Length: 138
Image (cartoon, rainbow, N blue to C red; front, side, top):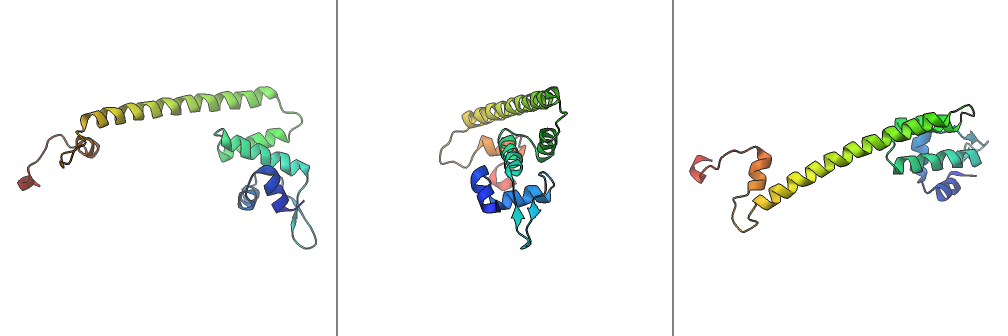
């Protein structure tokens, strides 16, 4: 199977597949006499795992570990579960940070008159301004 076939079957671009290969995230494909990569079903599984793991937030390094576990017949599902639960904790923390950002933005938006004047509490707050200066002072 060539790279364009693999791209179609995995939903990845050829460029992404080559990137994952360069980073050593997948088993290197065999090369034919013509130098072209030749993929097998195992490659499809590794690349599909990578695509789906990236979609749920795993980093490249975490994906490397998951592919390693995928290829390890002696793996323990407890190891995979532990990594998944750790990722859930990281996502929960990120959600909390995003909610705090949203709340801050809502407070800033409510403080701004949103009219045609130049006075903007949002800009003042983001710039760290604690008082308004007159045009002569600027």
